[in-house]
Length: 264
Image 1: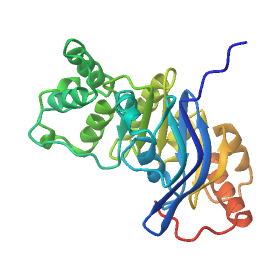
Image 2: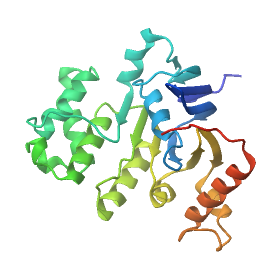
Image 3: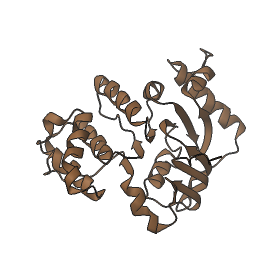
């Protein structure tokens, strides 16, 4: 009998310290193909987790595998990065680049071939609705358009793992609906992790939710299961998932030992 495929992302006792501050406390998690919501209050460790998976920050202890590669092996990092897409909360760019040049530059960093780069760039821009702004300078874009350009660069290499930190910041309601559709499309073939404070985006696009609190897992399950925790209208929140989020956090805080000093 063939062995089951490895998960796209596998964490074993992942621990991260920022100087003397504990950011992630021995996380053990797997992420398969699909769209995974990463929720939690400020300081929960969401950004720290995304940065480790994106290979831009090291783990202090534990094991992290992405696409079958151990991130502790520096020789494996180029192969992992070629198959990753990453959008941080604040991404850098050259203001004088056009949108097309910016996305093409990221394609070059991802080592896409010269023959395929042009088509890959155009496809990424069309997927985020920036095809008609391809020749605009980055410095002329609105906040929402900049965010869409950031999403385009994360998609240009058709990644197997897509990491998005607060991706809908600056998007208007119509754009957020389109973005959710895009996530569902990408999640058919890739593992997508979306860190966000907007639970309605999680409810609409994600198949699974991981709630972090103080660097630990406070809840993990489907969006339907999280909404079921919010059946009590006395819980804070206007939506069942918001109430479920509140209920899960309260339960975690009441039953978990304190982890003082956890940061974002």
